[in-house]
Length: 302
Ligand SMILES: *[C@@H]1O[C@H](CO)[C@@H](O)[C@H](O)[C@H]1NC(C)=O
Ligand SMILES: *[C@@H]1O[C@H](CO)[C@@H](O)[C@H](O)[C@H]1NC(C)=O
Ligand SMILES: *[C@@H]1O[C@H](CO)[C@@H](O)[C@H](O)[C@H]1NC(C)=O
Image 1: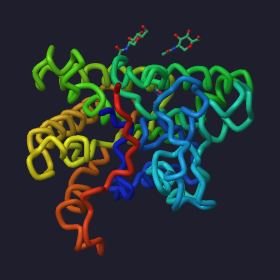
Image 2: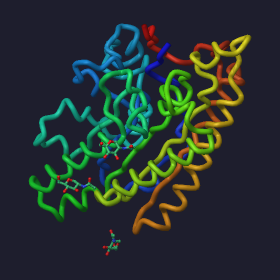
Image 3: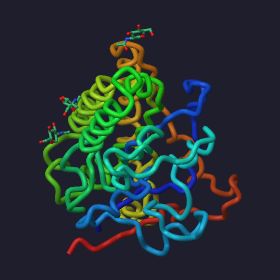
């Protein structure tokens, strides 16, 4: 089974980014996977990671599938709403010189990971490196539109939301038929993810990003494709332990980048505890049961 998404319909925005936002309506650039995608994959002809099916979007205004991997809004939509700005459009819906690029763009793509080979059986998806490359194209277009100085200022003041890594587990390390899970111990795998992420975030900084919010991963041991591996459908403790290790290493990386990269303000938003509590104590949130907390689109691999 391959599972496109890891969707937690309500994520608590642990660290509200408002404190690092300037007074004027902020421009936002969103990077990530199915948790933040707003429709890029619909433009990828051969992608198997699409969400234009009727069960998506039922709770979104209009009740139609929008390219979001969720019944309602994505975390990006929630953040945009909190900031009082519209959620930026998918990169692939815009022409390269569209004026809309000056107001923010969403590069996220379901199935994407930190590593290139993550989610490769979806045939087409934009990996984090692809997304950064696309942002570079946007930045070049902004420079020709408004000049280098104004484009640099726009990027320096913009908010960069990044939520990536879930697929490096769900659609890579945790798949017994892929190489990474066999080749690396978990410690080695985390090192690979963190050193790659270090390079990627530094590259965004080279491209004038200064304010970034990095979302940690949720308890992936509790999603349906993992629970089915346990006797009674419980969360897999070992997987959750790995995710906690990944999160704590990302947090350390963020601390180090804040000292290494000049003028950078990077926040780590740790959503794990709130989501785990929601799963463990659903009644406290008025939901009688929550074992099917993912809205997932599962397809047989053969
Ligand atoms: C992904 O592939 C591109 C192009 O081959 C390469 O430049 C990049 O370093 C690779 N990224 C990762 C994370 O391996
Ligand atoms: C961004 O694109 C320009 C123009 O294609 C290229 O010269 C530059 O190396 C790229 N920068 C990064 C950090 O990817
Ligand atoms: C950091 O901010 C200062 C003050 O705004 C500015 O002069 C300097 O060029 C910035 N450095 C970088 C690398 O952005």
